[in-house]
Image (cartoon, rainbow, N blue to C red; front, side, top):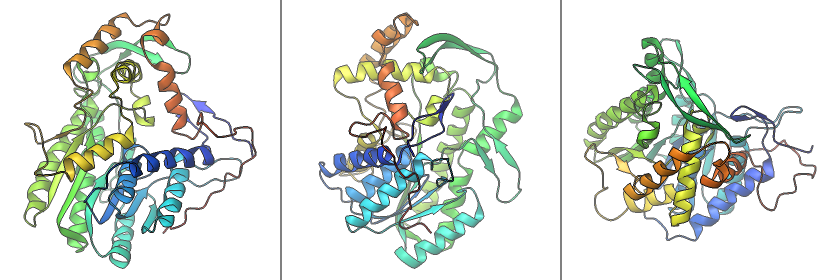
Length: 396
C-alpha cells in the first residue's frame, strides 16, 4: 500500500515502516560515531519504542554494547491500518541489534499491569539473568491500577486559576491565545496516579523481590522543568505535580537501592518534539522558538544526542554523577542557559501568525513531528508501494 500521513489534531494516525527504520538507523549511526561507553550490560527500558526511551535503548546497545529488553504498548498493522510508529521503530532496532550481535527482546503490552511485569521478570531470568540498568520512560494518558482496578486519566491543566498564553497550530501556523481552566482536585489526583512515580516504584520492587535486579543497579526516569513561559501549564500545573511525585519516588528508590550499592535518578531533559509535547498548549510554540535559537547557536540536540550525553557524561562518566540541589540530573542545561532563555523570551513577545515562520523554527517543528511517524524523511519514496506488515524479530 502507499502510506501517506493522516493527522487528527496532534496525532498522526498512520506510520511509514521504511521512514521509521531510517530514523532509527540515523540514531544508531550517530551513536556509532561517538566514543564507546563503559556502562550497563543488561538493560530494561520501560517505554522503549519512541522518544527518549528508544534513544536510551539505542545508546545502551550501540554505545555500551548492552543486551536490552524493551517494554512498550504498540500495535501491529491490521488490514488497511498501519502499525504504530513505535512498532516499526522497535522492529528496526531489533534487526539492527541482532546484526550487531546484541541480545534484544521486546514485550508488548500494558506496562502498568502485573501480567507484563511478571512476563518481563521471567524473560530476564531466562535470557539475561539480572538487569543492571532500568530506564523508566512511560508516557501514557491513562493507567489502570493493577491492584484496585481503577482507571485514571491524566489532564494537562493549571492549578489554582485560569491560564492564558500564546499557542500555535503547527499544521497551519496560526498563533492564537489558549485559555485553560484549572484542574479539579480529582483531576490532579488522577494525573499524579498516571504520570507520577507509583508504577516506577512497583517495577523496582518486583524486580528486586524476584531477584533479577543486580546489586549496584541504576534506575533513571525522565522529567522536564522548562522556562517560566510554560510553568503555569506544565511545571506548576497537573503535570508538574506528577513530576514532583516522580522525583520524590527517585529519592525513596535511591535509599532503597543504595542498600546494595545501587542508585536512582530523575533526569531533567531538554524540550523536544514528541507526540506528548505536541498535546500541551503553549509548548509547541515555545519549542519552535527554542529550536531557532539553539540551532543558531550550534547547541541543538535531539533525543539521541541528549541520551548519549546523559549516559556518557552523567550516568557512566568519570566520578560521581553530577546533580543539582534537588538531586536531579540536568541535561536541560544547554536549553536553560540564561542567554538562550533571554533570546527565546524576546522572540516570544513578538510572535504572531504573520511572523511565526520568521521568528521561530515552526517548519522544523512540523517536520520533526512527521518524522516521528516515519514521514518527511530524506531518501524515502513516499509514492512507492510498501508492505505495512512488519514483524518484530524477538517479540515475546
